Length: 130
Length: 131
Figure 1: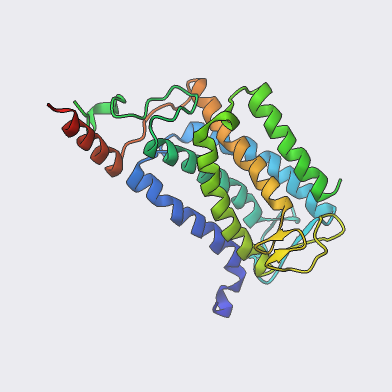
Figure 2: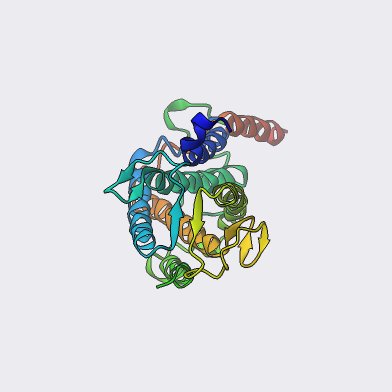
């Protein structure tokens, strides 16, 4: 990797996750990004819990981040901004994966009663079946 | 608490949440385990990069590993400590559970999944349904 990009090594991993999940939105049409309230209410608590875990782990020296391979932006002077973004990007990717499996395997129940099969009501006349 | 203890606790908490508290029950569903298998594959890839390149390093005093960054063995899988798998599992279960829970409560149930793949599937199913 070019030396100039070294501080963005960790951010690069997050970008990789975003890019690899993008086809789930564009091709499979999971529409996770288009349900923003539900997504925020999902990611918010997850990020909060895992930031707390991270802060505990950092202060008790469970793990360390390489200053040369991170941007050096530390939230509150301790938490690399990459970590916060990780706790946003990964839950989104997880939810998108769940929705992707349900799109492809539409007969498998998820437990929320949302129809995903061919008889699912399409909103506002988009690409109906019958 | 050590990382090992916290990781085991994290898994225990989300299992209880899923089955008994939130009662989402994703852990009993095929859709979850299929999705998790995909997620864990990518976790091993990305986490292997983060730990293999020493972007993140771990304190051997608080994890099972003795500290040497090896591909496999010494409680590491693709460079990453096994505790990371438990950490990731806890995060993934919590995220998916909340996502399903909010839908049950009526939050942002729509728009339903719809895209090129779905439309092609529906067209194919409609054709095969015709006499």
